[in-house]
Image 1 (tube, one colour):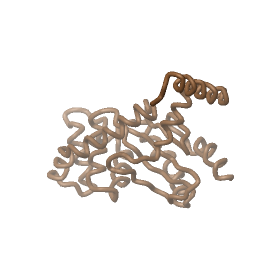
Image 2 (image 1 turned 180 degrees about the vertical axis):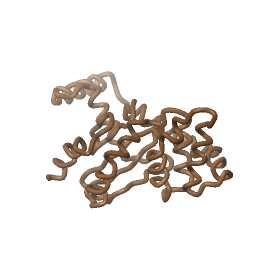
Image 3 (image 1 turned 90 degrees about the horizontal axis):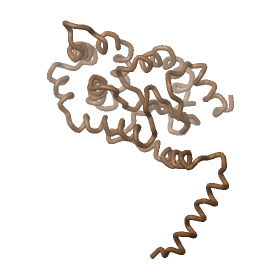
Image 4 (image 1 turned 135 degrees about the horizontal axis):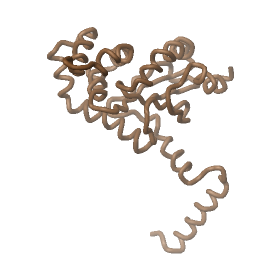
Length: 217
């Protein structure tokens, strides 16, 4: 049982610890504690690219309807993958942070067929984002999305079945909610490189400024 005297001592120890870390606010200390769980996967697991023993780990929170996310995957992703992921220097995963119901649907479709099609489908939808996320009447975005998924072998029946899957729906939103509440993600794309947060679209040059010192390059 903790007495009042014990509580006072514990409070004093906490204050003393904070005094030893003058460069960190209490908010920053709490943030560091939250980031200790950053590598824990969501309900559906993370789909990683690159080896487990890579010196650099990159986690991207993105929305499938985010134009800045699409720009990153068009302009930066190919070089990042070729130079660092395929060579075993970086381990990367994309996490769901849908900003609207259409983005949620897109992630559900990417998750529906397991890990094997996750990146082929997300890559396809980022590459052709303008063709489904921003279509105008008379075509509806969901119809355009269905047409796009035919390229990935999704029949109409499979497409509809995926979007009715409540387990996947809840899992996608659980990843977003934890990103929002625990890791303070509030915009896309947001990157965590070895636990450090970087907000907004990053060029390959910008990423290399962070990556190269970690690699000792």
